[in-house]
Amino acid sequence: NAGVTQTPKFQVLKTGQSMTLQCAQDMNHEYMSWYRQDPGMGLRLIHYSVGAGITDQGEVPNGYNVSRSTTEDFPLRLLSAAPSQTSVYFCASRDGSPDTQYFGPGTRLTVL
Amino acid sequence: EDKVVQSPLSLVVHEGDTVTLNCSYEVTNFRSLLWYKQEKKAPTFLFMLTSSGIEKKSGRLSSILDKKELFSILNITATQTGDSAIYLCADSNFGNEKLTFGTGTRLTIIP
Image 1 (tube, rainbow over the protein chains, first blue to last red):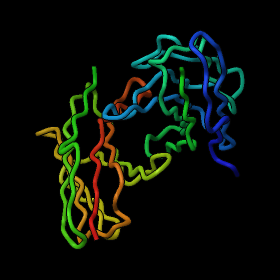
Image 2: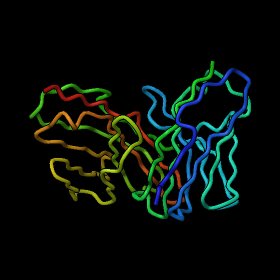
Image 3: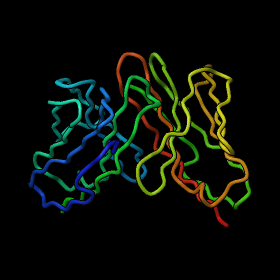
């Protein structure tokens, strides 16, 4: 039982490049979320999903796309990276109760 | 729009001191208030509070919720250097599945 896994752990991009951050969970959780964490800003919700085929926007969705074709996977796509997207990204999953939310180890992204 | 405000933003104390961290919230259709500890990597769950006045306790950590005044506190007694971390507070509501996080309190314990 690996929990929530994220790849890569670190990534450096140039402005305008695109990439996908991968997130997978093996706990059969329905709910998955992507957050970004910036100094002094706490965790801000980017996108979330309440089940396969269903996604919705969070607080800061611009510049990011998501899809949820399976229960296990919830990739986050940066369409055209910008320096403002330099951040640490956390994926999380949970079942029906908020206290079951587990976070992945994070991806540190730098956009030059 | 949900809002969670934590105070202080940072706190430096000596080992053995007792600290109180604050979290106030505004949420429509409140479901729960959660506390997390974040050391170098991902946040880890500490407590979930749903009812006013009922203290949740785990070792030297405890937390309580006041639903009338819309705040929660996290107490840590006899602090140790291993308590140094960012402590995050979040609220959840019925109706959507979002957790709204505060900016966190960075706690530093000096030996």
